[in-house]
Picture 1: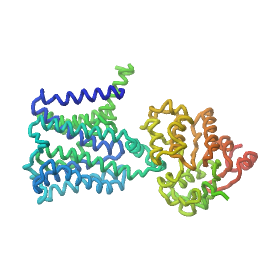
Picture 2 (picture 1 turned 90 degrees about the horizontal axis):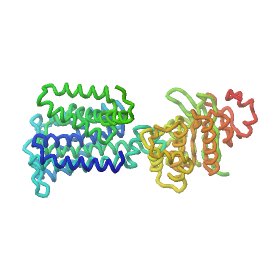
Picture 3 (picture 1 turned 135 degrees about the vertical axis):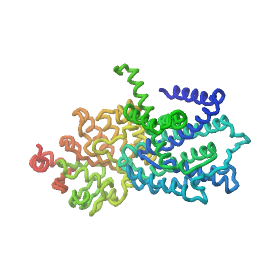
Picture 4 (picture 1 turned 60 degrees about the horizontal axis):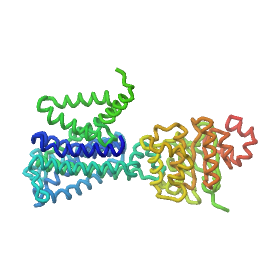
Length: 317
Length: 237
């Protein structure tokens, strides 16, 4: 697809997305809001998994840190939800900087285990530090912000706000991966020794990427707390981190659209299908299995490959 | 006396407990080509890895234009002006040809000699394929890209590790012309080669390694007429 056609397609998609609340009921609008938050979280993890080649199993931590700190500030410091957000993001940045410094002492499986261990520390804190997090009860009694006097309590208003924030965030992530820094990042994934021999500090590139991934997960965390107005330790559990990793891999790591599609599939199965099927986790497992078996590169690149083969007439029955 | 572009003094290099290079010494004069020859496993690539900083020597010294570099990191050595064309090319398969080149330029900023247009002028085929992914190029094109990528960093010294490996004879001839042109421009080059014709045709000086030791060192012209040395150390005539 040429860049002009791609821009038109994105424009049409955004226009259709903006019109959805005018025709769809609140349930579906809320479902789409959740999908957008999950898509941003997945896109942030994709910076690590897809572009840096670093598989993290603790990425939900950053969503949790941002959501918890935003909620705590909102409840205890007298700051409104909007004023709490930048402080929460700053806190998330600092946590990501420290976690990245620790986790990037290893790569491959070691990196994955370190991210898992660090996220478990935070999960444990969320459960046990009852004085701050209220443990298993979670933090409640929160409100949504009212930017410029706009009331975000309605499903449609929140949806439009989330659409705006997520579109900007995804646009900035797209700019990053297409920038010279993005090319260098992919270079460190493909040939780290070669990047060193070209004068790059591979560790620094990975660390900066880790911090940026943490930041965007934090933005997803702020949207998450605004949407749910409640936070529980399960939001930064191993299962939450595994789900977002699943979304990235299922959709297609290392592509811009892949994690968005993967997140949509996971949220759909988790929220919509679970209304009809009790064991939605099993269904998610089967769907993931089918994707790995038949489209191992992920849904977006896999479907693209099949379409290319169809167009060239090479697909045999 | 002018400082050598590269001077290696009695380095010992080990892979774990395996002693690979034993007191290897050699020097590369400014603006010349040094042919680093030897059979498989002689220690040629290990020498390159020691120069670029992947395998710091346990003993001895490596000097680049008189400055010690043997305990610097690979990125620091690269920033001092050492360009590497690694064995097997090792281009970035998921980046376009253009991005493969720009990544190398970004490392050390803009410089007047080697930029995209000048690399495209040296390798017109890369311009034709600039939007293609690196992994989809032919072997010869990948070698051009690997050399172009090293040049984009505007090195003072170029390390070429078996650049003719796996290439068709016609492409090897083209490659020889390119290296000769770079030499004529004053670039100092260490050329690791198994292709003796190519290496002796380009080199000013030659060092032959055997099981990690220097067994012959001298002008290339002398080696060209010395079948006995070639047979003894390289096993070919």
